[in-house]
Length: 314
Image 1 (cartoon, rainbow, N blue to C red):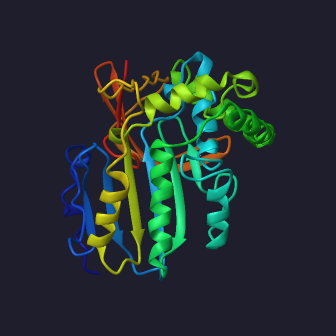
Image 2: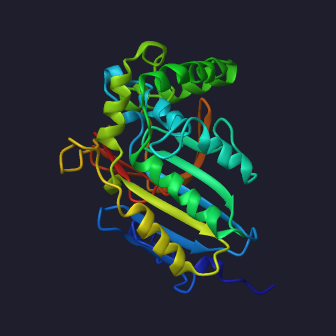
């Protein structure tokens, strides 16, 4: 039998290619760029599902940015976005989503992780006005969430119930596993669900302070993928709707720095390899490719899912 010749194949230079930026496109169906206020956008045309669009607003802040008295604040702020904003009254956004047949419920339209908060909407676009309103909702999340004392107090119960539901056997095992995996790192001490004491009794001013500090256009990206007839028209709508977003009044002009915690090294031998790591945390699952690279006393861990984020471990 003739050999396929696979033994003579040149090994793929994974170590050299790992951080290489892949091209996006094709150009007739994809647009990306940055607004004058620093917000990035990504628009892509997909023909399926027909007459539907998936929208997302990604905010570069999660629970790892929380101070001691803020543990759980990032997650509760995410909840508050759907309660009311400057232009949408109490639960008006929820009624809008229900009126267009969009799904709404716990963990369906947004999530908070250690490093990011993401809002997601899947909307019909056979009526152009629906897309326009959905983008307006996203822009309200970016700059105009109403965080009154009553809003915070009324939302505490929903988050406390979510916390209680996550304390089953599976949730407790997942939390213990995560804390072991991230031992001696801030990631082990900053689970998105937070502390019951903060969720139950935290001062509403703390929630407002967190939102005003971290929700800035230069920390955000808006993503739109759908069955768009004109991709450039969608870009124009994004520029019009999100172009006026700005840091909250009184905030410094400079974007605050996010310090990514170091991850402590674990016993064992590390080598250059690509593995499938399945991370299980309370109320959150992800599967991502991880690369471990050892150089001297340092171990570099890079996630293929989250792009060029690299953590150096000493």
